[in-house]
Length: 424
Ligand SMILES: NC(=O)c1ccc[n+]([C@@H]2O[C@H](COP(=O)([O-])OP(=O)(O)OC[C@H]3O[C@@H](n4cnc5c(N)ncnc54)[C@H](O)[C@@H]3O)[C@@H](O)[C@H]2O)c1
Image (cartoon, rainbow, N blue to C red):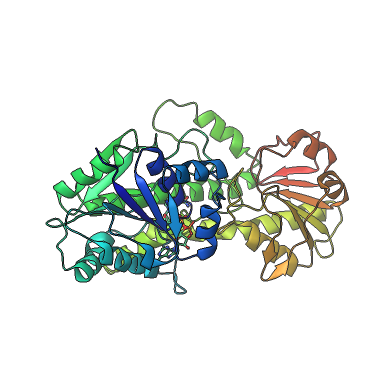
């Protein structure tokens, strides 16, 4: 079989792993990204994405992968995959401007027989109502007749050592069943298992269901963490016990707030869609309210802990450990560390941070001092707040040397013998 040409539009956390994996599967892959900095780095064999190494990019390049930021370089491919960002607008509604721009780019390259797959997370109806008309207008062709169009949600979990693109089942939902079959044939060469949705809308909904499920369950345990403390119940121990039930329960853990591109943002896409029906999506709105209050709760707990040691938060040296949104990765998007640092500063604390993945960190345009000597910084801090338990951190050592420690991840057992340590 001759090598099929694949164009990946958007070479970020989603698009780059796909481009690399498609090259590995024998496709001739071109990447298009509007950021020339990113395409230049990739063409020089450097990766900006946690789960993709420079060696992976080099290997893809040896298979013919090349990246460009110039649309004029692009030739009509057999498959186009759209992996551009879907952020929130200022009004907290969906911002589909990158999806629209990518659909126009794709439309200009469409030929009879092309497969177009949208992977960006978005509300149900986007593939049919937004992407399809743009593709058809730019090409003069019809989706489901002349070319195939599907939605195939990316389910990448950055930093997950067990599940990646290949062994996570890939959902495809076509505007027609034949479109889904075309997509299944493509993704079947890259992923171990392809799951067909009834249509693009169900595939779009499946992704939002997964993320809303996480969002709501995280809010549930966050709310429980607040009242369990007042009831003097160790919630982490209760979760450990509940998780031994072999059916009907999945553990979620409290934390300082939700971060990353998906959990704080995607449910807004769904509540936007529900609001078009004239009523709110109450579960999502409640979960948002609870999760967004967690940084304030962490700040209050920090002040309380210092108060017990007869120290005001105003003027205290507070060291934040781990400012990324997730353990063992460098991604800082929507990390709750930022509102926590802001609130601590507003209340007069002298905030410093340490994170093995973040060489410099700004909050509201101001640099937060980075602790270069971790042991010295822990010893010097009035209070250490563990926000992300990166594997580099020596937790027993931290527990033994911090003067006061607020563990927002529940990874350091609080014992009566260690009253200087508190868990969220
Ligand atoms: N990061 C994740 O863990 C994750 C997981 C599942 C789904 N998603 C979804 O996948 C989509 C992409 O997310 P991401 O994390 O890869 O974003 P990202 O910001 O890491 O990468 C997107 C890339 O697209 C480029 N871009 C923007 N507009 C473009 C255009 N018009 N043409 C070409 N390139 C363009 C940007 O320069 C950027 O490099 C989003 O909808 C997101 O919700 C992300």
